[in-house]
Length: 294
Image 1: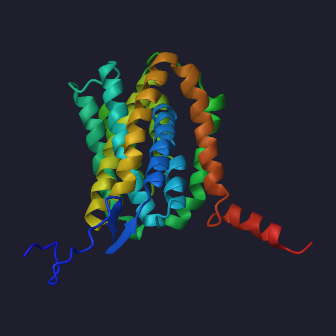
Image 2 (image 1 turned 30 degrees about the vertical axis):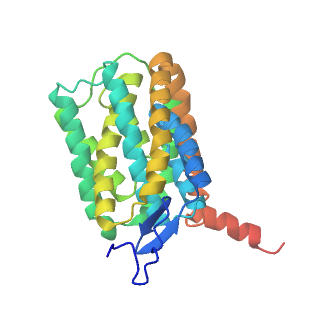
Image 3 (image 1 turned 120 degrees about the horizontal axis):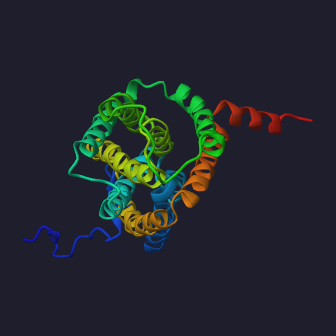
């Protein structure tokens, strides 16, 4: 007797094509929601390929689509891995990343190892303190790009050797990405520009490589834990891959004229989003002031 047929010969209910198992439950995602996820991924992928911060768009969309916070973060790693892989490939084809060099592989390995360590330490992390400090770090990043040394598409003299940069900058930011995540792209970017002397577009390209490495490491942990919602993540990834191609092409075409203002806007937007959250002291204080009787 077929495993799909009950003892009275009637067909068992089959799993709908748009359903997936999540922590032992069957959850059905309507096709129209999957389409919205793909469109959100398209926009987020384009922005992320230029200036990072795509998670600022995709994670809220996944939460609004019905995913719990842990699954939203895990699923965001899935689409983010696809998007950063496409951006990395696009920049490599344009000659912005040389995979024949030890430097590229060393940076990628450092970010991957850091993210693995971060994911392993997530249960012990002072997440509350990190959440409090992060918006101010992002505001400082935006201020640096706005009034700091002039950004250029031409490489400058590096302040750190590739090996030191990999160990002292790429690995710790990778650890942060595996541990917490928001703003990692901005931190990679400022490190590459300020300390590695990399020109704006090349810095964007290498940031995508580092983001891909740390995203992949985090994704592997989330897959092992069973938190990834494949239907939602793959639908969003379809849009993200297309958006990443568009964003990469725009960055290559317009260079620092596009990269710099978007970096500032994305850093400010992410800082404000995190600072105004109810779990942040600033957001909590504002809510208390609004709720207080006049």
